[in-house]
Image (cartoon, rainbow, N blue to C red; front, side, top):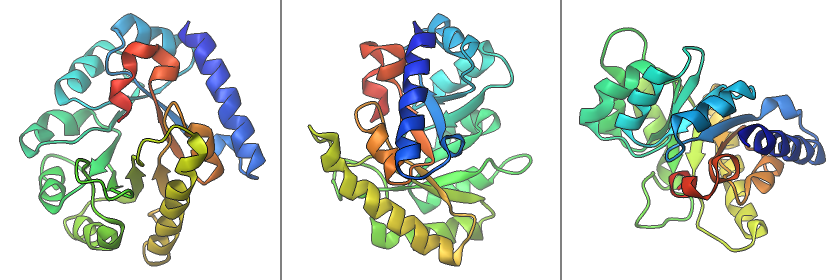
Length: 225
């Protein structure tokens, strides 16, 4: 089943990329697996999926132990400082750098810290993590100052019924990324777009998609946000 879902989603991603004049290969699909069982993850892996995301430290560590070693693990949830030591060694990319103290925790440890994305609260929603757009440059600068490799931005826009209504948020993120990249050229990734709106996100410049429910079914719905 995962193979069929992945084939359809990849096709839709490719179509959206072409509509906006982009190379489909420039978009990374992260299968956010949270509530899928290991058999479901393995089925996706067997279908060629190599990028997987988790939003809980314990789940990430356990699944990394069970899955093949060439999987790229993305941590996409809010991360507490006391969980960094568990998550950092197995993470390919941290999507949710949302504060300076987390940057300092992430910088500690053996070897180079995995690269990060700064999380932006583009909708200015008080219940969501992430810095406001006008504070993005300050957090990027602070993270670079402690030795982190900041690759771009991540966001979860406000929930909307019509995916088209998310377009302004995605467009704002692309403009913010472009402004930051003028100062820091490595800040080029945009992690945005989930099951209900990933095609619009691709059309507006997303380079990384975080899709769960469309791949693993309705039981995976919660982890995308």
